[in-house]
Length: 326
Image 1: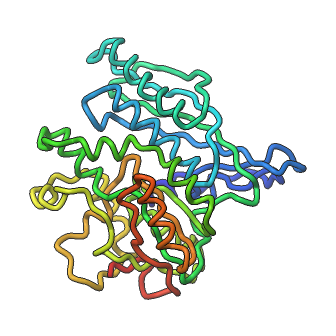
Image 2 (image 1 turned 30 degrees about the vertical axis):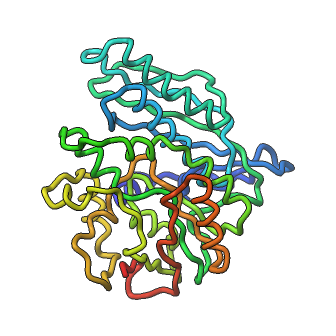
Image 3 (image 1 turned 45 degrees about the vertical axis):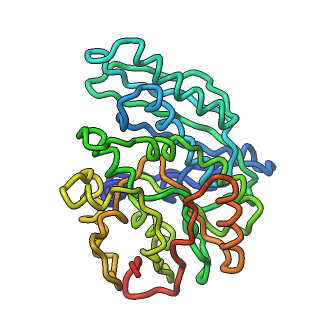
């Protein structure tokens, strides 16, 4: 997170009346109006990942679900996608590349979007993802930092996929069913249900972990908010505690902790806090909404097979730290 801020710190462009959110805003997507008279904005995002599972078809599904998630996190509908395939042709034949693309296409189709094409290059390391466009009404965009003090936070998927995918690569995870099912699940369904509630802010939990994206929810400069996470209510994937104890943790999670722990205060007994920094792939959505709507929202999510949905925290007035683990 800190590195990205430094890389883009000297980039600037002239103000434009069509631009609603750009690279300066740290949002999940860029957003621009179709015209100055338009009621709708185009959402644009791009993401790709290295393999997190051995099966190429499932890898394609997860990578596509991960990329499409940014559109849903801003309240939008996915319209189109372009494939981004960096193909390690030295180690994988064309059948593997085809399986990756088929997995991606199935998730694009499930989302209601159209695949328009893409670009492929040879690379020494396999990577796949999507450039995605979506659409949202200009007055219904969910920003990631506009939650209100007193809002409760609802998370739709468990935490710990980074630890489990590291275990998969190390051949140390026997049962991969739940983590694969969860990473492959589109956040589309949670976002559709959320349209019926007063959503004040939303983001998806990906590479910066729960804490990193929680910090985003507090705003950037001169913010007056903190996030209190209820650690006992945060859903964790089964088995991650024992894996973390023997060091099966991705490097990105340790990097998150090194960069962000100065903004975190722990006010409870914890065996380990690395889970909350864990770099997620295709993680859940984190919603901020009024206190009196949160439990009904969770109940509806769970009724619709989003069974890990939970109230995981609240937005509070500014405290000594941006994030409180309580």
